[in-house]
Length: 106
Image (spheres, rainbow, N blue to C red):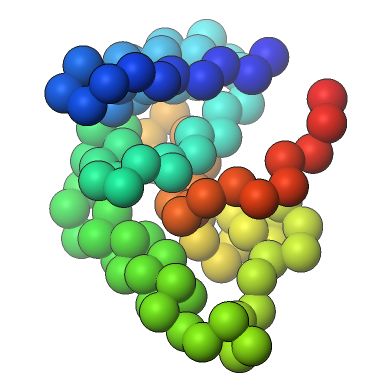
């Protein structure tokens, strides 16, 4: 199952995404939350805490600020999760990304 939460600014997307992720995880589902918001606070909403969330944001920003010819993007989802992710309460995995260029089908 894939769930996307979108809408205009200030509409509560982060709160809703956090609630849905926690409920699904508490039901025993494997949850990967992907925060591609320009104001990435899903980690805080999921209970990862400020330090962990800001650490993920800093790693993402460092990659974004690296000259394009020097960037080493993750080539697999597993690598993306390892480099730019963290595990939170209820077993939720969170990944901070700046954008998704080539989503995999299915």
